Structure formats: structure tokens, C-alpha cells
Image (cartoon, rainbow, N blue to C red; front, top):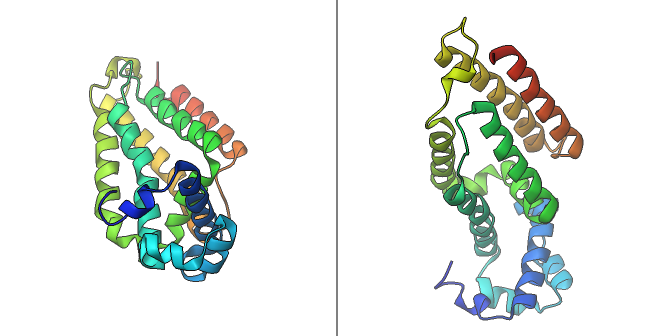
Length: 205
């Protein structure tokens, strides 16, 4: 993210973080349409003219935040390595990383979750998000160890059943986030890990 936003990147790190945090908090809480740049500058402790000097417009600021939020999953994908071919262990590894990110930077995750409710304004990032998802799927399924799965069912069938069930559970959570009726909580993580354990009982030896 260089070029258009060089003026912002030239600021000292503390001031950059104040502006980023204030903007993420407002957009995450209010959504794009209702988010107030007045609130952002008041929280960040800067003049409104300076905010537009750095970003040009509310839309450019939001786009910058979307790019910023996508850096974390992109970096994770580049570093992602699995120690074995255990399908559910891989899911658990990814889930643990997401949980750790939520704990270390809850505001970033809150903003990232809010993007599900701003479909009209994140459509321009759809291709990028789809590419990240495809990279994740490729790594998840590459080199699976089918010998871990039960013998009375074709391994590809077992994997497909687990994938359907996992995708359905994740879809339910995503739908709740889109509707604004839920956010990812520690209790949901407990349920998720219990679900993985139940799948292992059903489809593993």
C-alpha cells in the first residue's frame, strides 16, 4: 500500500496507529454508510482536513482499511505449513491461528468481521478474497493422509462429508455475523473444537 497513501505512511507509527484504530472502530461499529469521519478525527485527535489530506475521501479511507485488514490472512497463507496430512488437525491449526489473532488484535478482527455486512463496498475486493480462499483450500487438501480415515468408506467420500459439515457450520456463523446477531466468541470456539472432535469420532479409525 504505497503511492497514493505515502503521506500517511510518512507519519510516525504512533499517529498512524491512532488513525487506523479510530477508523476501524468506527467502521466496524457503524458500517460504511453510517460511519462518521467526524467521530474518527475526534477519536484520533487530528483535524478533519488532515484526514482527507492523507486519504482523499471516506471511501478511500475504507478501501485502505480493507487492504490493511487483508494483509494478515495473506501473510498467514504465505507462512502456512502443515506438519502432517491429518485433515481435521489442519482445520484445527487454522482455527487456532484465527483465535490467536482475535486475542492479539481484537479490533482488527472486529473490522474484518464487519466486512461481511458491507457487501456493496467490499465487492471490489471479491476477486482478491476469492483468491485467498482458493489458496487456503489448496494448502488444506494438498498431501492428505487418507490412512487415518475409517476403512469402511472411500476416503474421498469421508473428506467430502466432513467438508460439507464444516462448511455448513461456518456458513451458519457467517450468516449470523452478516445479520449482526452474533460475533465470534470464546464459547463459539469451544463449540467449534468440540465439533471437530465429533467429526474425528465419526470418520477416523
